[in-house]
Image 1 (cartoon, rainbow, N blue to C red):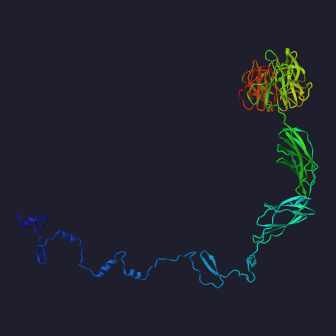
Image 2: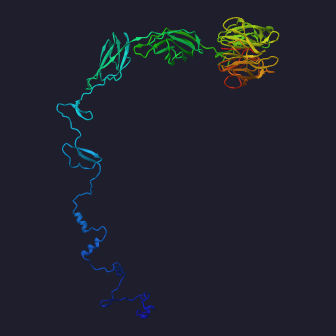
Image 3: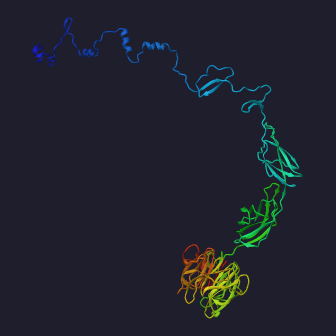
Length: 639
């Protein structure tokens, strides 16, 4: 197609020019002079778009200023004026207000004082008081009595010495006093009258010695180093005291560590207010006083408030020994000093008796199946060992009853050679190995009896007499002398083959045989001759058991029912009840010798084993060694 196109080809149906048909067509603009050949380029179009509508070619300064000041934060004439009025280097400071920032108020008069009337507020006010004249008052200090001021000396005095100590002294005697506020920066001037005064030591103590008349002294504290005036003068008047006369003390009988002892303190000085009983040992328990009140203080009993000129004091010594006792009196009146001690009384206190031993058990006599034995064997409670020989009985025999004092063992009655009944009492020392000696007789030839022991006597109860009859007799013999036993009452029924146990006050006869086995526990008092009383029953009837005793209970060991049994029964000495089971021996056996320690029972006989069981627990007995021979129906003892 040629460049000379038809007009119709360049227009659309509306008469508008079709750009798509303008390729290679030269565009003309209309200027003031008509059409030109200057092209309207893309760059011209971009430039035209960047010019806002109604833009003019230039603006005046005023127009520019007005347009600028219309902008936010513009620097205006007003700000220029404000800046011109601010000094160079000025800052934006505001003086604080409130308490502590106020200026001294205006006003006020000469000699007025600025007075705080509220927090942060002061006002001028007249001075409340005028000073006294200073003329002639050099080196003085201003003081006030609360309403009037005055001048006073500046000197300060030392504290007066404070004296402690008894203000009484024996004639020609001494007493120590103490300056309780003593100081090594201070000197003390003491002026005595009718006495002498020693130097004050580094603890403030000095000794006053009476010389004649009524003693006294004055004391003043002074110092050169502290610049203080002397203290006031202190005067101490000392009473010349009189020693009270010593009391008297009686001499009670010797005793033991379980028995109370009563002392009488007499000839008590009328001026005394306290009695001191001095045992010179703390090994005692205070019991009571006859009047007033008493208390244990160390080795002494202090007694106050008694009536009359004598008073008793009761105490129990707790350890075996010899005690040297004395007494004196004291008074709260300073005019009377302690008396001298009374004469000293010496009292021997031995160990109290206990049936139980603490060291050894013994087995004596018995029958070994072919012969009667004289053996006495000893074994230690503390260790499991074979028993050792401890001497011999005077007569070989078995089925004997055993008793023990604190020092000796006793074997009574029994069968001897030819199965003869006898009434012999043998005695042997528990502390030395010797042959037993004759110690008298019981009233009847008898065997298989029960033995029990008090502190002073042995008791034989029941048994089989000559001819095979059973008896109910209880015989009593003294440990201290060789005599024939005396009758001490009867059992509730005749029997043979019982065993004995002992409390501190009573003997108990347990079990036995009389036409059949017996379960009775009979009790007889050591102190009185009466028929025994029923004290309960064993858990099972039996004959030929052994008996051990703690301090509170009896233990019945083994025995024969239809054959041997291993049962250990226990019953209380204090109440009447049926015995209860307390364990078993190592084996069933009867015809036994028993020994009692303070904590355990020991059973020997029928075999060579020594059984041991605890009083405190229900268990099977344990092996505690062996005896060297095997007897039946021996006796047991302890020490």
